[in-house]
Image 1: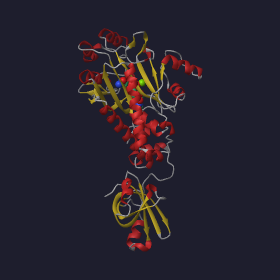
Image 2: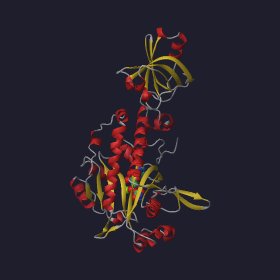
Image 3: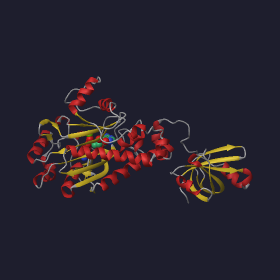
Image 4: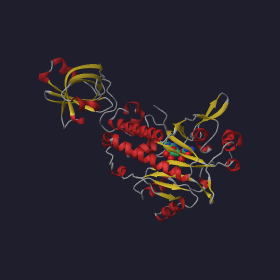
Length: 431
Ligand code: 4AD
Ligand code: MG
């Protein structure tokens, strides 16, 4: 059995291929069933005079998404998808989709709600499999990058007793008579692991009860979170830009066919070269006001501001030192200007918004206690986290990168919902 993507290596040979009927064209005495197997599309040819009449009849009645196994010789054909064609000599139909109950997704246009309701089937489309191929390459690149840099994976729990990123987006669950929450970020645990391992990362699903309906928010998304003992803000920016550059170069190396299916112009991705520009929050505010934004110093950047700003650069831009009051309780204040935090957000180009958010963490016990109190977080819920500042505390920091935001940008997608196999949003938990 040969994967369609590898058929180019079998020209002149007879092969077997398993897959699903993507389409069937008929032209007089010729039938052209097109098969898909997840790795690519293959055009088969059946010439009436070369095959027994039963075989011709069997192919002729094939319906979309019927599952089949075929045998035939491979020949080069520049006009065919994938550059090869299969001269079909034998077929076994595993399941014939009945003409009375046809596959619901046809080549005609369907509305997004219909497609999302049929997400379990929609995944089979060329566009969706291309996106999943890119997602796979992104995740491989992430793991290889950290592995190559000497990071040790230490995953964080999903069920947690307290908030990491503010209490307004927590999903509450009942945990044997107590309240627990789905994790918003593995960071607090990654900090513990960093003081054990030096360089660590966690990578898993995270949850936010985001009540806003935007093109950039999911309620369940995958985040990779490196955390590094002794790292300062500049080290984090250096790490983040190299990670993103490594991902882009991996995708350009391995996912050209997928980008082509998505009609993604790769020129803007090729421009993503090190180093990425760094911009202080103060400078970002000036630029935004000059560009017509009504935002004021002290506000967090809204989605529209992020878009406006990122459009001024041809590669991701790192905005650092936001007002501490607009950011999370754990961020280390700048010793020279305590009103700003030693934090960084990386904004993707082409208006894709924030893909990375990170900071140096407060390493002083008393300061962290004060910040918990100011944020109305109960010290008893963070006792173990405070312990990290009692025994062997060191400056440290890390960041989180949302996989789906990165995939949406790389694929040039309008909406983040197509970047994950089964998206969870405020309006959708099925299929
Ligand atoms: O900026 P965020 O909220 O940072 C944290 O959670 C930190 N604790 C991470 C850390 O320092 N270890 O989220 C980090 C990234 C964002 O930049 C974005 O890419 C993604 O996670 N993200 C989302 N992606 C999809 N849907 C959402 N609702 C997201 N919220 C955040
Ligand atoms: Mg953020």
